[in-house]
Structures are given as structure tokens and as C-alpha cells.
Image (cartoon, rainbow, N blue to C red; front, side, top):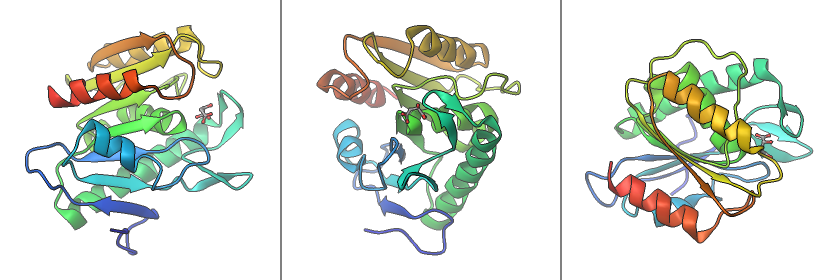
Length: 206
Ligand code: MLT
């Protein structure tokens, strides 16, 4: 099913087929779109409602969720603006579709904007699965994450996300009160079967 045109992001929305499963906010990586993470969402939480927006920023034609100056160096003013824009979209979509606060499942650039939303607009999300995430804001405002569950899955051979950066993100979110589980897998930036298995197990326990 495609999204309702009056909402502020191009998106895909699939209603839940199993009551009680948490709605998912699926956030693609650079160059992806609203279709990209649908199979992943289905694999990690079958039966959940899926809300999947397309990033509005174009980098040489590739959709992203915020501007970067170069790989790993972010335009933090844009990160802030876009995180608020995405949180506003989530609020609109929740109202339009009668949804509970979703759990974000983000990959790469999508994981980074999800981390920024947690830091700037924690009420927008019930929790997050951050796949290959890095620190989106060097000086985030103090946030109260009030025990929100966050799973961070990093790759020990990731050429884009330095190991200490992912660790710093985990500790920033933990300090802000999130219940963080951080696992480092023996993989690179791409997703592996282990990511799916761990994310599914974690979501099943929510
Ligand atoms: C980002 O720009 O968010 C990160 O470098 C990940 C990526 O999209 O390549």
C-alpha cells in the first residue's frame, strides 16, 4: 500500500496484520527509498505496521535523511532540522493511521537520523534498532530517554563507522537514560544474517 499523499514525506505504509506487534519506522541508507527496508521490517517483526519514509535530501540524486559535508562528516544544523522534520512526520502518520509510537529500524544514514531523533525528540520513538550507526551530533542537548530500549549493531570491519564512534553513541544514549544493548559483529558496513536474527530476537522481547 502506498502512502497517503497529504503527509509530509513520500512514504509507504503497511498496516499491522498482527495486533500487539510494535509499529516500525523503517529508515533506509544513502541511495535507498521507502521500499528498501520493507523486507527487513517483515523479517524482523512480521505482522508489525510498517511506516517507511523516503529521505528528502538528495546527494547526487541519492535520497538521504540529512546533508553531509563528506563521508562521516555531517552538516549538524541540517541533522537537527531534519530530525525535527522526521519527528513531525511520525506524529502526523501516527494520527493518520492511529498508530502507537513506533520503534525505528534504521540502517546507516537511516540509523544516524534515528539516533538524532532519539536525542532531539525522544517522544517520537518507542525505541530503536540502529544498524551501523554513528554519532549524529557532537553536542546533543540533554535528553531524557527514560529507559527506552535501543539495540545498536555495529560491524568490527566497518570501513565507514569507526569502532570508537559507535561505542561513543552507545554511551551517549545510555547516559541519556536509554536501555542500550550494543553488539559488535564480525562484519563490515553491509547487513548480515546475524543482524536480522539479533534484531528479531530483540524485537520479540519488547
Ligand atoms: C551517513 O552519511 O549518514 C553515514 O556516513 C552513513 C552513510 O550513509 O554512508
